[in-house]
Amino acid sequence: MTIFYTVEMQGGLANRLRTLWAAKAFAIKQQKTVVLIWPILPELGCCWRSLFTLNTPSKVLTIRQSSRLHRKFLSLCRHTFSSFGLGLNRATHPGIPWEQPPRFGDAKFIPFQWIQTCGEFEETINIDPPFKPNPNLSKRATRRIATIREKHDSLIGVHIRRGDHVRSIATSSLEHFKAAIKQQIDRSEGSGFLVCTDCEREATELRDIFGKRIYWHPPRLLDRSQPISIQDAMIDLVTLAQCDQLVGSYLSSFSIIAAKYGNIPLQIAGAANA
Image 1 (tube, rainbow, N blue to C red):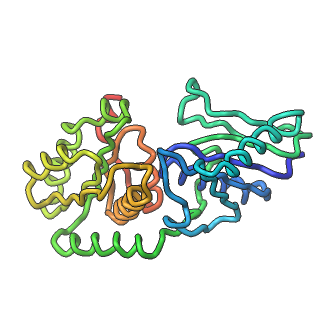
Image 2: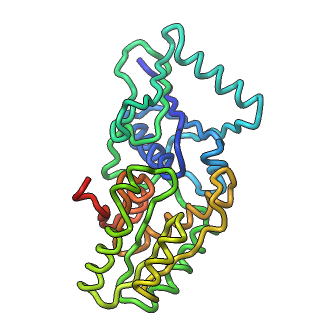
Image 3: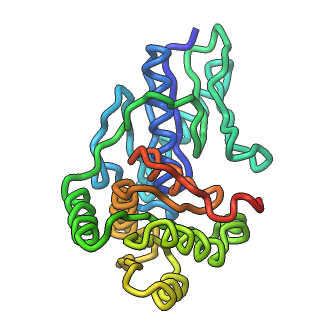
């Protein structure tokens, strides 16, 4: 019988929010205690408390890699929970598709289980969001949306994932986004488009083609190790969630979680050619 479950969260902001959502679903369905580990790493250098408050029975512990004590604590916990038959530690292996994250085992005599994942390890249908955005970040997102909505009949979110996501770049090309925007304009002449992307060149090109229909707020910083960068990402996520629908990037957790949080339709640019 397992009485205590631990999830070591991995990846960027959206990956962790998906994991947090799954942990809430698991805790509710199984009536078990779930503790999530939020490590502050170069790929996400921000404490969760500056991004959102919790709406889940799960608990979240922050581990700072800059702290020797925190590193030793994490190492000791991994060792204890995964050794001597006391626990189960199944790390995310490069060979495991991201759509199939590791799950807690069904072992009957393991009191502790520990998994490392960047995805949803439990079905989250009909589970309310496990987080409430920081009020200050939420207000900034709402103001941004309100200003744009005054000028358009409908507002379409456009999330263009670039950076290091090779498969997303290859599948959801800029040409696919252009086609999706043009199709929407043909359907509704009064549409506006809120673009969230880490690529200034592509945002500028869309603005050159579609003019003042395109709205893009450049991130203040693209260094994920800095809190301000992650806070800007949270604002983008909340902003996209308040659009009427979303055109997102292939295999992007950010696109998925934004549409899920806002409960809006999601179209993946270029998905037909994947």
